Length: 546
Image (cartoon, rainbow, N blue to C red; front, side, top):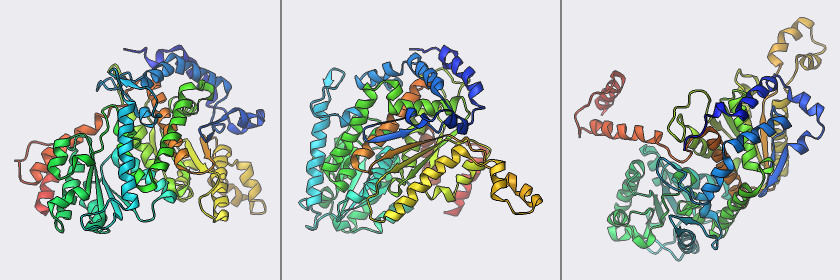
């Protein structure tokens, strides 16, 4: 159904008028005028605390954003998603990653079928298999326990489990080492295989159709490597599949009893909660994997039931929408002040940019009078401070930042953690307050006047740079689940506001199609077709180098 154009809505136009004033606001003044600003502009749920007071907005801004969300039908679309309606319009699919973390007794239907039983049957299979590998009952073909697990996937089937296994490193099984191969670049596979023993290595091939080009190239390379030292009969003890293509996995040499399916209503970037999360269950154990699902479910229930003004994902989405749409912020930096979350910015890149990096509405109309998804990027603190924070503080672009931190560490180096949190909080304060010319002059007092004035412009910080801070007590499977679900639902809300389909990814496909043609040309399996001059020249140079 075609929605009214975003920019034509009364709420959007009211926000435009409001933004004309807000652009001149100074956050220093907003805090000075309202001693209760922090208390009013912060909220918590599902083990997470959100402080969004360091943004250039006030109560009126939030009222107008809430009205816009209601006009755009955010709550109605949210309810349709949870009900299993086919809101992925271009593929005619439901969007039910939330069903993957719902309790066993939840009644969730797709096309009249209760999917809960199917979900929990797969989870039971994941539990039985992961338990067997972890306790040593599952052994390789020579009778040795598994010591290394190599997950072969790409996109969500790589980023999700890899990020989570790294984040939950403190809960990992001491015998098992997790490896992840996604890149078709042979260096990725070479690095993984050079570190493992075929007798004690388990491969997980993650491809729903068992036809994904990059994944299957890597899978076949791993298979050939393994068969250098073992028979084809041994494959079944060392290869399992997260897939639905029974015939293809049997042909590969995988026992269908070791196939873990998932469904069309699970998008790749939302799939870590499904059998794609098998590496997580192997790494941390099914008990902690269940806690991970429970944390996400707690955020789901909060998102479904909390009013907009108290709803963490919706608030995070509305604040981000305000910064993007009305304050011209073209990117968002993710700054986890926790080393174990070092892949979280990359995970959010796919989640948000693949979901909302769209230029047409759900009805297919070209969007030409407003912006959609900002660029998502970042790194862990304090590394980012010594890399790109210079640009964020004094560059010509204003980039909002999400600071993420745990109040308590999982280590005993408490002086390190105090320094980490001090840096996190100090950076958010510095981005908000900046440093005025008069403050610089006061710092330089005692130096020659001309030298002071020469240095003032270089040492002045404009400040007024927006940020959110998300805190948790500890980084645990439960709080990590809630954190990921928070950003999933934030992405959903922004997609609804922009009226884009957040659940397809046609832009991923074009390069793949062209790559198949060029690969055949590079391998001499096809005569060169007519490309542009640059591409023809690059192909020629590559062929000459062989």
